[in-house]
Image (cartoon, rainbow, N blue to C red):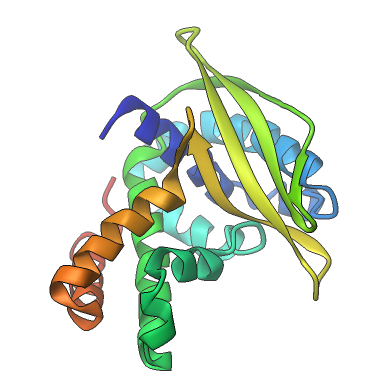
Length: 209
């Protein structure tokens, strides 16, 4: 996996790691949400790095409990399936969404401890359209390298809370990459086979780092 790919996984994976800070993270302002998450979670991952490396199963436990308030994996799964979502059965939609969420968690568990981040500077949110914004940030690693990371968030009209649904690292969208990859696989093998393979892969190494 590329350097930028690891950074992208780490920045999304940071949302898995803090039972202490969750209650204090605001979701009424996307800029403040990203800033608060970034600052608190980088501190937490640095504090807990050795423990999480020794006990990778804890990352999954944190993810199950704390990622859902901030990242809309169901919206991500719908986008990734693209045109195939319209023809999928309800059971297939549910199965793909669950398998996709599990895959993300497994990927983060494998990669989020590999990079050292010193700080994140968050810029003002920019409205893309009503209820959708991007929040740009600059990530500085311990070796001095700086990387542009942009979060995408939308306002859930029912809850009036902002939810994250994509991240771009140096202009490369994680969500778009997944859409291309899974779209190709579904086209070749069919949705049912792709779901079966995703579930099998997730089950094979559920907690490894």
